[in-house]
Length: 246
Image 1 (tube, rainbow, N blue to C red):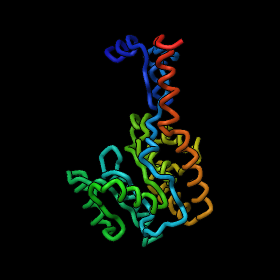
Image 2: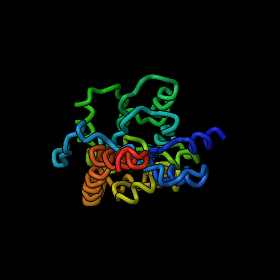
Image 3: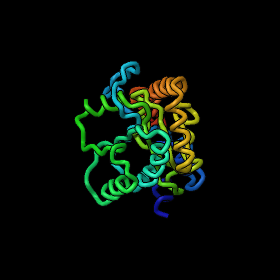
Image 4: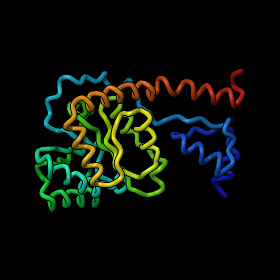
């Protein structure tokens, strides 16, 4: 009742995904003309133009951000074990790790699976160092806990991967907004279980032509979700709806 009251008493609403807009309209009776989709996107002023011909790092997979419950990182580690069983030298890096019980559980799982040499947990990095690491990786990793609420989630890191020309490998809930985004942009791979994820990542790592294609698509997608392009028309819609401009 509270959500319905709020939705019907605001002049305008920004939502970050089409599925959120549909939910406002269908579940709460929001006037579609009083809302607009403004994707999380990214700030292009904070990201360099990606260069893809000078990779030197042996880190192939990067997870921008610490292990978290809602990323279902323990499940991701199980999937990564399958990758390492077939590609023993594959490396995955988590960034911005701060010690907490879930990070400790993830470290323990890595040790139990004897993946210590394959998985690295780095603390908070200076921005230039993080960008360098992302530019040298080959695939950006994103995962979500497989529950209904994750259908309407797309993390900012997905758009930041796009900004760096990184194809996205996603492990999560079927039929969610991440699926929609990656299928629409053709800038990544989608899987809903550990085996399918491992198979898809391995195929991509071993197919340089497809990797280059998805990387190019990621850069094209980045242009679409750049704040400098998405915010002005969204604000224009707000001002027109609220009668602030003719």
